[in-house]
Amino acid sequence: MSVTSLAALAAIIDHTILRPDATEADVENFCAEALQWNFASVCVNPLHVPRVAVLLRGSAVRTGSVVGFPLGATPTELKRRELEWVLAEGAAEVDMVISIGTLKSVGAGPIGDEVATLKTACGSVPLKVILETSLLTDDEIVAASLAAKRAGADFVKTSTAFTQKGATVETVALMRRTVGPEMGVKASGGIRSFAEAMAMIEAGANRIGTSRGVALMREAHF
Image (cartoon, rainbow, N blue to C red):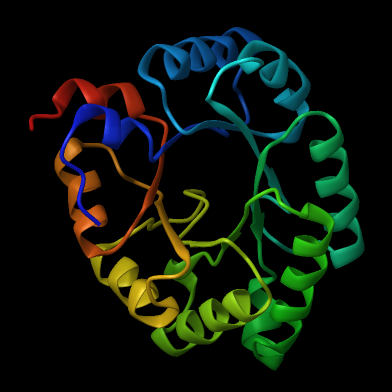
């Protein structure tokens, strides 16, 4: 993917505030920044979805939220109910976390089943599948990425940013090679500079999740 302008960069940034101590004022500030810079979305924990949906109403900036976050160790039925709630409250994009222990225990089959269940519940709303790649082998990344693709997910995503290591160029490139050009790849976790964002994009990411979206834009030079 090639990004050659500030507008093009902003259009692929999910302006993300998922930290547990985020206040209502913090979230409102992120929404104001996203509207100023025309980011793709503001990604928040479910609690904040109703307020964010109101603040972003009428704009091109979408309300994003998370399901099974940050561990993924939640039964599929509860993830589905959480997803249905955030959609009802105004979420227009959803990032789900897979069950990492299930993948490691029995393989990617149940992962694909879960993604398919949640994608059915999403309908036309984009579903991004968080793999938490720092906890996986390359073979597990490939297997989970393929399972997500076959199940109809719209993106595979590197990480929650709640583990020791986030996105890497090598992992993004592996995910892009695995899913091909038809599916989205989201790089998230530890992306703090314009140079790092551009490296992820060059490796194949077409969405960037970061809490430092404004800093990236201010550093950008095209």
